[in-house]
Length: 374
Image (cartoon, rainbow, N blue to C red):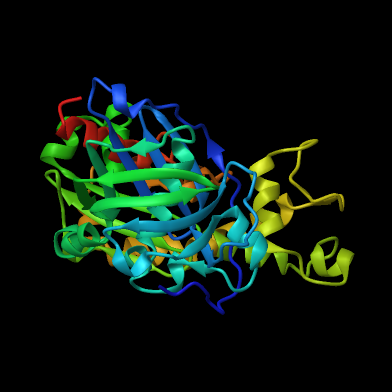
């Protein structure tokens, strides 16, 4: 399994969420677990909680130091049904980005990245999500893929089975007897219905467009009377990182090139926005540079480069849609929803998905739970 990439560094997303203390041996209610493998982040969810780590990994060995932060794992595959993985070591999550900033492997590097890197990302995520467990055996594991019907058998063959691993030195037996694969976006749509943002009757009887604004990609899909339309799927290979990159390279007076005599760091720009408003603005590191003016200059152009072509490619379904559901981390960009609502062709249809960054994972877990009667 490839462990390196020469593609430029895109992200170092901070972990968020919480972990679960699960006594699998004495579990009386079947538990579904979801792992949403995104181009930028991998999110695990179960029992109403979640954990987010970067979708990043790099090869390691038996001498590699064990990381200590919540969003990092040293994964060693000791034995199990993935014969080709036996003896492999990986650093996964934040530690992969920190260890190999420009050469860590990322899902977005390859068209089949979600399948290629699924096993280490899923096993590391489960080990981190359940940090006290020596055995992890969900009744069902739910994952998502862009063409679920076609790709499900491949994903199931990668993940299904028993895997004896060490996660940060802790020996864990992870048993995945049932792996359900659903369409990307279905989890977010289900979460929006469960949270009351969209009426279930609308999903069952009308057309809904799902717009997923990720870190590395912008995705669009149409849902007609509850069914995802495979031929409607559109992927634009630009996401929120393109916006952070434009801000980092801003040459306007008072911005990066003017104040620092160099380009800024897109990852640091992203972290600045994650920290939020400080003194009425978004401060770049400790430089005193307020990023909001640059942000407002670039937001519209970024939307024209990503959201506009996505929705134009979906025009047939966009025009029929009762709702355009906006989800993904990019949905939280300041002022974006208002910008979209100001467009006459879109305004009345735009709906922000609750908890957009983690909505797909939460909805996937809820879907899994519904399938096992929980």
